[in-house]
Length: 87
Image (tube, rainbow, N blue to C red):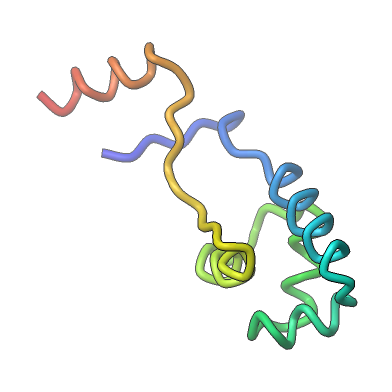
């Protein structure tokens, strides 16, 4: 069972990570988009912290750095709550 928490997911962290790593590689947004196999607008939206992006496209970009999106427990209380529901 999957629960979505409004404060659990922040695009700013991903935006900052992608922008920093892209700049460390000395790629322009255009060059990076081409290498990642996504449209330039995808890179721009990610780096702007937009939250209405395709997960597959975000993962395609993160794969360039050996990362991907995945579930991250917020706290033990939430994990306990989810475990109780699954029983």
